[in-house]
Length: 532
Image 1 (cartoon, rainbow, N blue to C red):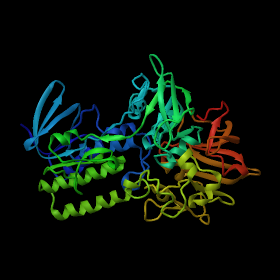
Image 2: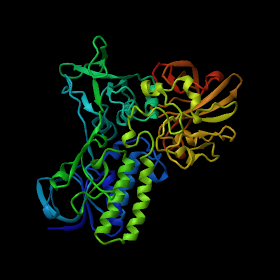
Image 3: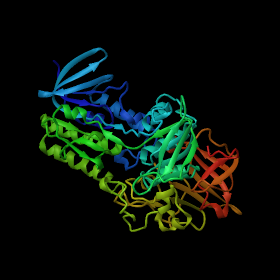
Image 4: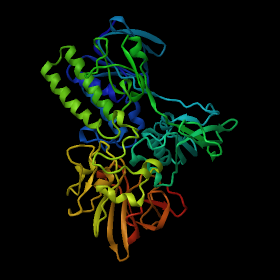
């Protein structure tokens, strides 16, 4: 029976990060994953990550996945795919099924990084073809190049629902609405705003009553809910759709931890049942660690750091690093993790209705929470949205305390600053000259930065914006500018399209609009009337 210093179960962001950390310290490390390719959810994530440089901010998930796989290879961590771990038994015996063969190996240390599974939502018609989880839709689109449907209703306004909703539109689907029983948007406001400015409506405080169709989804019926979550009579709305995408949360995949005898806890703030771990990721069973979403649902950036912490702890236990070196690594990684766990979306703060203002004391946008976009009378409240008098200037419509600062890092002139605390609202400094490089527009993971030229030509200004839909509008193409709510506000003409290496595959459109519309125009719709 083969024995390893460390067995990692799961080759997602947490598992690969743990394996890299441990193998780089000399541990004989093997990773088992039941899937055909490593990286977990990362290879489905074509959007850019939030955070700072150390959290791999403004890098797309798919690229981060490729980096982790390469690093694991370089440090000698062996990754075995299509290998399902069946159980963890006494003395750290691990049973693995690969193909038709079942075999056993032993481990001195084990890191469980099995991730999470999608929650389901049961309603009449939920078993019809066309009803699917957001993760399934993401897999079809981003791994297999298949459109999940033509007209899609998204159930859930958390980050997963909002991000996948945009990716559905990028794939060519029509997103007819975002529906959530909660009274306010659950995910980042910047994600909601991306959808709202294309014209996607939000129905918060609504639930789905049923899906209709014989052999496939043909219609979805929703209704408003009262304070007890019961449907309100005579509030039904019908949508002709062929797909209903469900994004109502994730639950830790704790089952292997249970077979290993690890103490479990049920905490709704962490997504449900999960193994209890100490600050180093160790469970109640000595030598068995857990990292990533299996210990509580967070972003992939947090999962990678928790994997590093568990990998370092395993290295200490195995005698490959000193206590002093472990403590140094732990302090470094924990500090990085603490940065991500600040702000209104951290832990118990997430979705807390008692949070009504930013950390700076600015009232949260009621419109953003209820409808997905900022109202005109709210814009001036936020330091990134200061209107410029003339020339070029950035407008940063980031109005929540989320952990992210790439705008500060990429600005060569320091027009935009966030400060030492990563969750501070971005501040635009009108006295600093903007050179119209556009790096801030492309770098923002939330696509919340617009570059405004107040003086393009007499009577006209220009607005530069990120645009990740295909086909791209061509220079000289005419259409309509949409405001933050997705409503048409004025004619627009594309005067520039930039796709260069520093923009990380994010095309930047510059549209010419009447001078009095530079503060309102936030999206370009083609003359056909489609936003894409």
